[in-house]
Length: 280
Length: 309
Image (cartoon, rainbow over all chains, first blue to last red; front, side, top):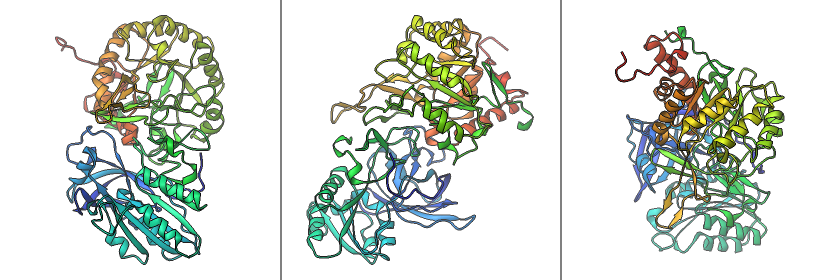
């Protein structure tokens, strides 16, 4: 399957990066800053594979596989230099625990940038970016770049305040920012789709949606887009072993028939191409 | 020092510039790895198993991580032999050694595939996949029954003059019997092992982690099993052996060669490190130099058993 997004321009690298910073930002939330030699820059929505097994002096094979991680923000390296690239991660298991334990000065292997990117916001439209939980990390560059061309609204949500990430960074951008938590501990109480429905009722230019978060959240956004006949792009998450199209582990069913690889055709898809009911 | 070591090996009539291949199903159709290394740095690669027609794989979830390993149940998803020959092979540089892997449900369609692939001068050899552990029919059925395996190898042998390799399953009681059958039926070499049949369960949901329930275990977890089987097969046959199973480092590869392998295939490690094949090849040469072997081929069978000097 091919999708309508522009192909990612950069050839992926496989390099050892140096940890510059690994700050705790809430319970289990970390902001990992890496210095990546020769980093070609990433398009909004792209990701890297980070190898926790290569993150200490003694390499380990357990856990074995690298973890896909969205690029949060960072520019390309100057020729011959290193780029500072940020990632937001949440500890959910053994692999992310090892990533969270990385100390400044340690090195980690990565492969990237990988995957498809969000098609840029369309000038003259209202771009509404909806992020849930760790999915927030995939949207920062899109919000940042889009603000120059269009009216950008961002809705960030999570179960609780401690599950939100990067909110202060988004609020520092020239965009309209809405925060929701299911327990009301920050922002308005409720779900991101409640805030989305309200935004769509307000008068304004035609809207387009960009969503990244838990599958039920993205599915709900896709339904709203379908009902209101809006363009909607989603960025899917899936387990994968390689990130560049050979393990075939990250397949998801698509309406054009058969399966599509989240690592290569995705992670960004037009929402109406995804067979939501068939996702694991 | 390393430069003075002769790294060439002959795998059943396939001339390899070094003993490192990458394993079928872990290396796509080759071009996926072009951003990460010069493919000609490898001895060669075995392309994803092909079927006569394009084939879609299993529903998700297809993979799961396990201690020092992973499970997969992809089910031979592939683009089909015609797209491989017409679209993917021409994209590869001419100096890359390509081995094609065949999969079928009966000896007839294996043979038809091998015949079609043999028409291409770009195909250096044929590997029969007689061991896929997670397909409902075909593959492993042949790898687990010596009589069926013999019939399959003879049938394919009859249609191709290309070097013919057979990828064997570890899911058998006596690997030496399977190795002998391949030799007697005209195979030029054998490759072992394919993934070990396995499963994993999520206790919270009380469900198998794979949609297919069963999958194949690969990675460092299976390496000692693979090494044992290569050793046993090497005692049984005189055709060359390609050792496969959890090879991540040059030292891992050397172990297989010492136990009797002429060449090796690197598999799961390609996912973590897309340049690992080149690194393993360089490391084998460095090992040979360090230990005074003028040719890496001299490592084959150089194991020092108890009591030997």
